[in-house]
Amino acid sequence: MHEGQQPRDLQEKGTRSSSPQLRQQVRTNIVGFANAGVFVALNNGNGTFGKPRQVLGNFGKNAGWSSSHPRMLADLTGDGRADIIGFGDGGVWVSLNQGDGTFREPTKVLSFFGARSEAGGWTSARHIRTLADLTGDGRPDIVGFGEHGVWVALNNGDGTFQQPVQVLSQFGASSNAGGWLGGHPRMLADLNGDGRRDILGFANAGVITASRS
Image (tube, rainbow, N blue to C red):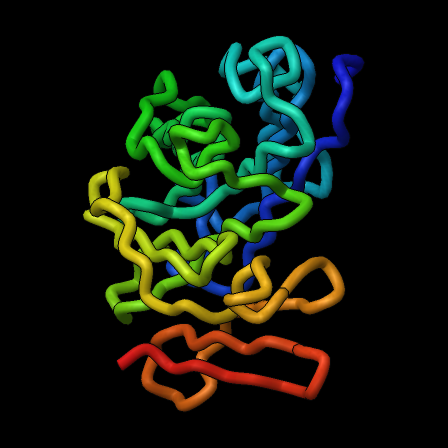
């Protein structure tokens, strides 16, 4: 792994359904986003890992991805395996897990949540893009804290998402949306026990919450 960024660890707890994984085993594997692309080191089951191997030539610096482009791992389809989702210049890209430690070639699934103006002008310095199950179906949806409020794109269950919808005009970076910037963390957690993630924000005046109706 000489190409750049540090590898990312897939955290797993308990049973297979409690967290996504690269293979159908309760083991933590390593996924790294390097200059040349995506590298994987599979868990040997004895506290060691196999030799890292490149599984994709995308999502890396050589393909135009940088620290301003969030890349995440999440089970998007409900098969118990971690897929890759990346927020690039032109929108959202997904690479589905093939179940053997490799991933399919990335597919663009949304032309929003991207850095270019035609994709919404999202930047890591001002805007948060994250994943959370908002509907209680066990699949992560996209939640974006943008310039003028909160945007949501619901998961279709097949690695794609519905078109984004603005659901709140608060928690955004602009003054009209509250002036929420880096010093104002915004998180998603189930606050009322209904199995769906709510918004928790730390503002100048204190803690503000919003639950999905």
